[in-house]
Structures are given as structure tokens and as C-alpha cells.
Image (cartoon, rainbow, N blue to C red; front, side, top):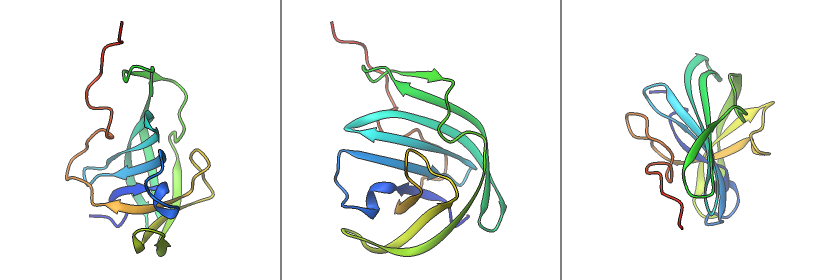
Length: 141
């Protein structure tokens, strides 16, 4: 298992509990997602990844989805992450609530103005969609 495996949250560098968050998830089965929250899941992008070398990952096979306002997710063409070769570093940092935790820093790349993500928790062994994308809802009439 790679050091990058896990659920990473931009909110952990501030004061967790805010309504908004940007999250990156890397699962041991070489799949992952980027998710954007603002009270609810606004959208997410899934991808495959491989460790290209120490401190470098290759993202491929991206698909992006946006919330239609009724918690149904429609596929869109615009990608926030895209198919990229990313370099990163992981180093301990201080979270106001969690204390000292590992932080993932993307080098030379930002997603929605974020490039630093605190380690939130270990990921499950296989890919899961981000919280809020599991079950579509019908529009209220």
C-alpha cells in the first residue's frame, strides 16, 4: 500500500467542521476521486491512478459528475483534475483540531484553489463513491 492511500481533506488545515471541503481519496485498488462539498456534495471526479515514481502519480480515466440540485449526479465534460502527472510530498503538519497529522501537498497544481490536504482517515480496500453520491433522489414536486 502506498503512502498516498487514504482520504485527504483540505478542511483539516483550517478548522474542520465548516460547510465546505475539498477531498481527495486514493484507494488501494488504484482508483480514487476528488469531491467538492458546500453543505452537500456539489460534484466529484473519479480517476484511476498509478504511482509513477516516489512522489509522483499519474491520473487517467477521469469522469466528472455535478449535482443537478436534487442530489442526482449528471456526467459533465469539464474536469477539475483531468488526466495529469502530479508530483506531491507528504509531511507532518498541524491541524487546529487534529494536532499533528500527515499533509499531502500537490506541487505546482491546485484543485479549486487547494493544493494541501490533511490525512482524514484510511480508505477502504476497494473504491467507494464520495459520501452523498450513493443514492440519487427524485426532484420534489
